[in-house]
Length: 143
Image (cartoon, rainbow, N blue to C red):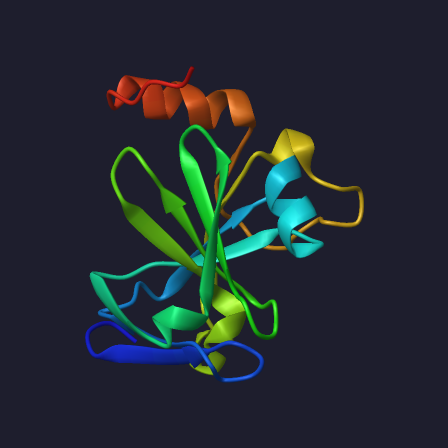
């Protein structure tokens, strides 16, 4: 799926998202907040750009000092995670039918993973401490 775009939508269809030049892999987050937010791990899809239709249906929730999460105000479908220091968003992979065959690039916050959340495959797995250290090395601060 390199190049092009991928289309997705919430459960009721009120919010439609197009991701431009999507990466053909997902990042899986097992952190406590992502599990509480979606009931399981978070499968994050990213790309080079995006467009959104139905913005008036979206509710955004600031879940921490550095993150915002959004959902459809009509059906409650989780939509995206926004990293506030950069403004970058990742989108719930389940919104995009064409992402069903994407591979896992890496798993993060594996030290917070539920016992039933084991994933198959040979890909990097990072603890929360490793993820935060990597972000700090890139210049991000967490208070």
